[in-house]
Length: 345
Ligand code: ATP
Image 1 (cartoon, helix red, strand yellow):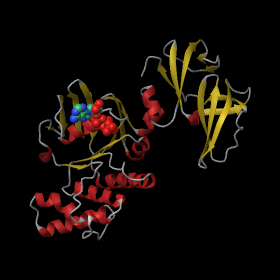
Image 2 (cartoon, helix red, strand yellow):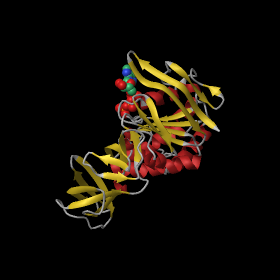
Image 3 (cartoon, helix red, strand yellow):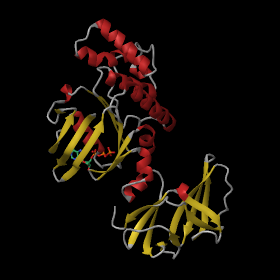
């Protein structure tokens, strides 16, 4: 069943179109990440879903109800923002209890619910602590507990983890995902971090310039990007300009990648680094020179140059790779290249 539906939602600020005719359908229980570069309209879209901004045009529905002009406090959505917006002068317990007190719940109900929520976010027994006595990750959990206190119909988070250091952020991504799965709550998260989106989302919505370029499962966005921009934004990729040839795709260097059918005389290929085959010189279609090798321990990144074209290849951990300056041949795993007409953005 559809939880949230956006129909032609547009937001203009003077001459700026922050969100441009967005249609989205989010099924109940789904975890959706709005992903895109700075200024692409993610936050504006989220604020319209939350009811903090009104669309210039278009409609927002929740279930069967049109909520476009329903005020924020009547939507019963839970929200966590980058700033967390916790009350520093209140204890952890009082922060979480705040929305329940506003609702006029009884003291006993509130105390039980605060305990339950602190268990849920794995912070049992810290009710009486001051917010200032908590680490960044712990504050994050308190903000999540407070947003969930009123059993919201929809859970909205805007860059919730961006203030945390990289390790903690990765741990919280997994935790947030497990929490969402346990609760089964429809969740929308804004992020500009593609790893975060890949970790948490059932569906990734990639935005650019106020528009939605693609909405798909993370692995499908990665393997079958809708545009070269999407391919480049999600993970690393090699974008190669090619021209159509009777037998395949021809690079500027003259190398021919056989068996790749192009939709137009000029085209772009997106080839993921793990799909680039590193072969002994003369044994693959592209001749290249090794420029740099980065051994990350968990895998080896090989930076190569074929004429003017730079190409990155990944090899598995411990692979032995030709040294800098060596000449090698490159190939592409069959069926691995995503192909776009040259004019696609
Ligand atoms: P970031 O990742 O940097 O937060 P974003 O994808 O969330 O970016 P938005 O904050 O939604 O992007 O902004 C989209 C566009 O709308 C930007 O060009 C921004 O300058 C503009 N914009 C957003 N809010 C306002 C406002 N209140 N008044 C005028 N322009 C705005």
